[in-house]
Length: 112
Length: 112
Image (tube, rainbow over the protein chains, first blue to last red):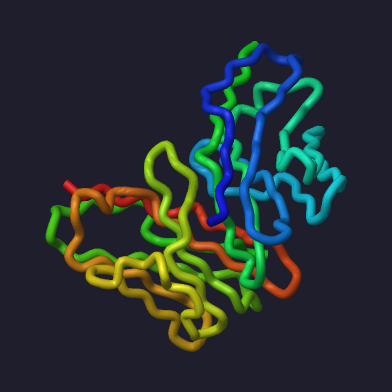
């Protein structure tokens, strides 16, 4: 079946540091890939997505590139802020129905 | 525009008691999902509705869980009787034609 593997957290960074959160996937078919973010006390929000190989999703300074050859969708940001502290979930969707398969989430803590 | 609304936000019950969660999706969204998120894990799909029809309930523990979506709008998820292992956050999400999934804030259930 489909699965998503994320690097374990928590990841603790200083403000303005470079961020990478690794995500790899296994899927039957040709998935769409997503990063969702969950801020404290809030629901999941879509951060970015990519629907085909070599697509780059981007939003709020975050980027991720759909790499079919390595089955990866790593999240990056060049300079993190304290306000980026949250839990980040990598997810995929295959077939109809938009059912999402999530990774376990990576908590990011950004300190001054 | 109002997002996905869930209630209650928190619920504490004793084991063997019944509990119900309510979800109001975004207006016009025909597809509704219930996910369960265990502590430290990503959400896992319980059931998906297309309008009022449950089209994917393969992960719903049908011996104690039930769901309904009358008139294809609001939905209710019920557990009867609850067990200690049911403690989790229950998330509702909805999608419209061509949109990504929008999530509610979730109901945090604690079974004692």
